[in-house]
Image (cartoon, rainbow, N blue to C red; front, side):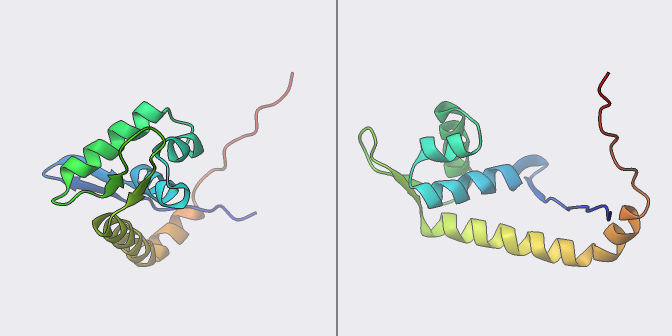
Length: 120
């Protein structure tokens, strides 16, 4: 069986973590579901945690990434800026993985597989 390695990307701004695969997945789930709570549930997180992450993203970029409709159950969607951030992140992720392919292939041959827990 071949060991599969996957490269993940984290974007730091001025030395502080800003964007990674978790936040991007949250944005993608939000776009699919139209709901902050449903996006959070899809990632096994509370509505509050999802809302705080989205609020932080909205404040971190020059334009909001997520727009919400006022009122309970109003829904949410990615703005044009949000769609651009997701697209750029995924493109950078693909470029990084392609550039690291040879090194990852070499590492895959050296990695020891995790042992399955034995039942006593």
